[in-house]
Amino acid sequence: MTRRRWLLWAAASVSLGPPVASARSAVEPSSAAHLVLARQAPAGIDPNGFLVSEKYDGVRAWWDGRTLRFRSGLPIAAPDWFTAQLPSEPVDGELWIARGQFEAVSGIVRKARPIVAEWRRVRYMLFEMPHAEGTFVERSVALRALVARSGCEALVAVAQSTVADRGALQRRLAEVVRGGGEGLVLHRADAPYLSGRSDALLKLKPRQDAEAVVIGHIAGRGKYAGVLGALQVRGDDGAIFALGSGFSDAQRADPPPIGALVTYAYRGTTAAGTPRFATFLRVRPDA
Image 1: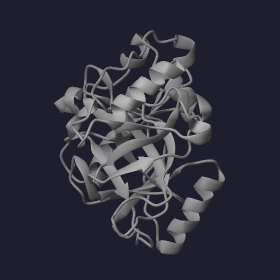
Image 2: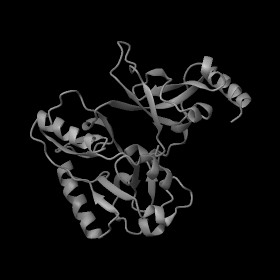
Image 3: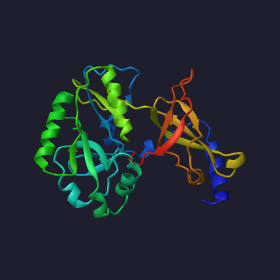
Image 4: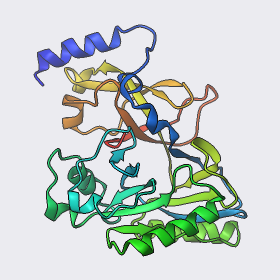
């Protein structure tokens, strides 16, 4: 993008007036709305009543029984040999390679033409069966049985276990993070399948993070003159704020477009309810 085009684009972006519905919400297939999403776990949460698993930082993918899809509902161009091994039942999980390899797996699964040798590295870490009957414990048992029947090395049922108390939970979190993992997920053991965000599914990480939709671009000043200064974003709770740190020079020159879903880190919230010290982490390619 040239400097002139950026200036014209930025000027148009910040003169939009009141926030409008994002491009993402206008095109997102309604069938994606049934997925479960995690809330941030409160400080000092008691793990009693929850099953706990590692949070795999991969690309969210759900299988509807015929097509592998991103969280948005758009299809993933996976090799035929990969999808041929998937079950007839809908399943939900993360396409994952290893800890700390988000960018690598994202690059593999976003290609319009899949490269078979690259997909051989990918594992499908399954953690849910959308709209299946029973409690989460019962669905987890069914999911393990389904994976065992498949005989497919690429399919993995995410291990779920109980944790004795708050201290044990914090020790497990520290162990995962020390090994390069992202954090933990806590799922109410007795919960039926609940779509959207609820207290039945929580994420526990050493730093808080959340997602927001890009609704505008704010032109930079000083050393950032001619490129992005900050993204104007809208969080899940409707709060609108500027996200101005965490960008590389390349990202400032070619920023996430309006309608993109981005992940940011933060440290608590202000009295007005906006994130404190919000820092851009990445664009969510699966959404």
